[in-house]
Image 1 (cartoon, helix red, strand yellow):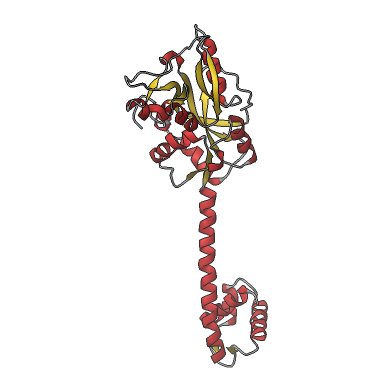
Image 2: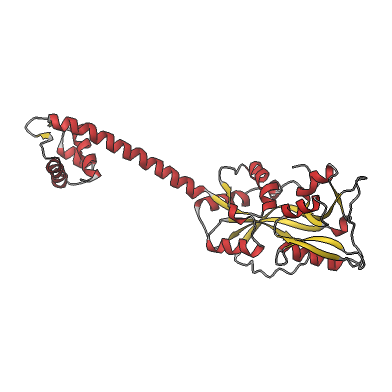
Length: 315
């Protein structure tokens, strides 16, 4: 038994006429009549009284009609729900971002842009290195990537020609140390050869590590470190700084509250800061409805309205 047979029977019960019911179902009358006959054979009884004008249902037909209406209505509602889910899925945009951006930038930026119901974080990406985000975009594992990008010259071995981006904000890595009782940093740049500073470093293949090394190389005086830990996530480095294990560079948004309450202190002045843009990347060759709607929104907006408040402002 096929669902369309049940739909045919409901149409026939409503119109009480084979020709009109066949027209409603967009089939020829012979085909329609044959399907009704097959339905009766499947049920093992006569459902239509063909001797009356207009046609009428037999008692068995009346009973069967109630079932047909229930089944076809449930199928209709289920189809609508499935289509709604498919439409929602087509509008969803997955964004991959490092943990620091996921925590300190993405939620407020989405709220500012009114995109909370359209863009959703891809949580597997929080510990990726920079190249991983672009590889995921190529694979279609995510739709967009929120990334830091250095403003100053830095060796980044990455071909980004196949991607488009929008700048949505700025950030700075700032050197931080636990504060002593007088509010001063326990560790102060640049350190000395005899007493190098314990450095809580970023992963050596990560963007932050490369940008920080380039910044230190540009300084007029040499800095001296003893690397005591390496980590991908800024939150891990912040915790080790807070526990007094050494000096480390943190995104300014992440460090702001701890600097304000005196838990942490700057370990060096602004010349030691490493500036970054915050960029939203997409792959040029990948498209779907939600991604195109998002990108159209971004490209049609005043660039200044896309920018997340600068690190000197409250978020």
